[in-house]
Amino acid sequence: MVVVTTSQDKKEQIELGQKLATEIDCPFVLRKQQRLSQMMRDLSLQGIIVVETQQVTLQTREGPSFYFHPNMVKHRAHAFLKDQPDVMVKAMNLEPGLKVLDCTLGLGSDALITSLVVGKAGQVVGLEASTVIAVLVKNGLRNYPWESLPVVGKPLAEAANRIEVINQDHREVLKRLPANSFDIVYFDPMFQETIPSSKGIAILRHWGWNQTLDPSLLLEAARVARKRVVVKVKRGSQEFNRLGLRQVIEGGRRISYGILSVKEG
Ligand SMILES: C[S@@+](CC[C@H](N)C(=O)[O-])C[C@H]1O[C@@H](n2cnc3c(N)ncnc32)[C@H](O)[C@@H]1O
Image (cartoon, rainbow, N blue to C red; front, top):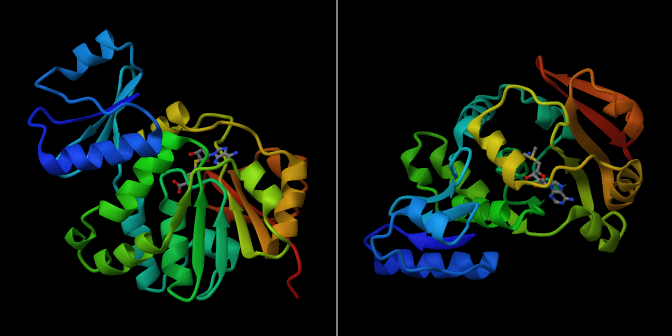
């Protein structure tokens, strides 16, 4: 992986490119009019991060490119502001002021909705093991032109800014956290069986960590959670039984949420 700018090599792009390269721990290379495909071949790269004027794009040698875009979140945020139900919000029983640990940040969509609901009085920490995804999503959360979105732009900008992104393996973080340090601990692991999915999910499959949750990890999560542990799984999958989740909330045709209530009344 390397970070480059567009062929103009503008000052602001160079500065952002150098910052992202430091965070990813990969080289920053001056583009000097070179073609990306040529650079990928010459440097034997699987991917290149290109700092463009409006966005940062991950170009891959094979497969889709990726840039941060709050696609689905826009609709969910509109619905939330109109008091329409969101199944994830219901599964986590979210309310203002709660402290939530999102153990699988991914593209940050669930974390954004969570941050919108828990508000300024609450807190959302997102853990992401893949450095490339963590860095690109954090940059997107902070620098996306939210003001371009009518109605939901301002609340989403504030919600995005409040999310703390940590590039670490949740198994390590959970072990170190004190008991009861978050209200909710949330997991949205990569589904093992493929379902038709978006470009964003394709990029997660390529660059993200893809591992099944271990039941012992849920016990660790239950130690850290004051109220509940919530796991998103494919509807009808055997994951509920394997993970010992009893309470299930159906979320449309494809997904369900399993809940491990910890110390709620
Ligand atoms: C299905 S995606 C989550 C999507 C996310 N809920 C969203 O709204 O965009 C799962 C993410 O969890 C990350 N992941 C997998 N194992 C992890 C681990 N042990 N620690 C932290 N992140 C992990 C993957 O890299 C991937 O980005």
